[in-house]
Length: 396
Image (cartoon, rainbow, N blue to C red; front, side, top):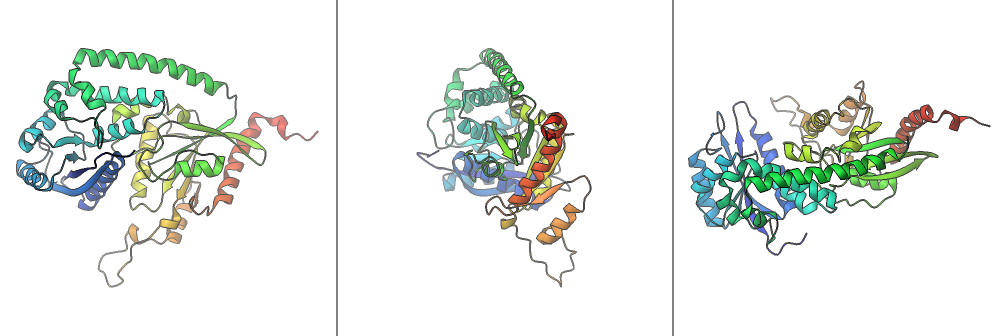
């Protein structure tokens, strides 16, 4: 999406008691990536240590004054908080920042903005609109002044923001009810489509956003699913029929997960995630080059449990081995070796040795490990396929 004007954004995070500054900075790095995906340029990160979140302003008023001065001096247009703000917090922060050119948003509304930009089909657009309305409903009391300043999205001059200024609670509730009804109809159609596929074995690609699922889909299915180095490149579930060694199966590419994924989006996209719930095998794609890949795996596993797919047989694909770079370890350091110092071989050995974790290490970009991946998938699919179609294996 080309922007007429690229706006600058600053990011705000909090380190609570026993929290790690490094981890909070990584969260803010991800928040910056989200903002860039939406069309803004990251400028500066503000972090404050607190015993607990300030109920009325999220962070201390002194830190807010510092942010206000910086934004005025540097023509900042967005202040983005890493956690979801309550309506009261957002209104109070806006009053204290006292700048009509400044938009205060949180991680949830930023992700909703990206989903609104990325939605291509009418089904995805309905899901995003439902999530957006569910998000604003409890915040309507103080959104009048807030929405007067909204310009509809980063780098754009029209969109959801402007249309909501005349919305009241009753109209939003009616719209939510209408969207739910419309989505139910589409869900029934999609369920019929899924049942018409017969009893073909189904594999679903799952994983954190931007780990290479769509690239892998293209390699395995020889298809042209949209893939780029941005968060949430895929919103609509894509299903392709794949044949390996004369054994057919269905492969689906689903929306990526992310930490602190808004509950409204999980709810709105639950039907899309039926492809995951109804899959025979989940292929969990992991970006092993990311410093916090194990935490990303935990986020995916937690989300899978939330949508009722936590007990599915899972095959882990560690992708992007070409980009893996361990940190150098100082032999004279008093600190013990950390996980960030592990070589790729050490990582491979530690994961391969674990029971109940069938896995493979590949580079979808360089096609390293692809033959073994295809062979592993063939074995898994053939085993299930043979159970469903026993006569196919009989030599007449």
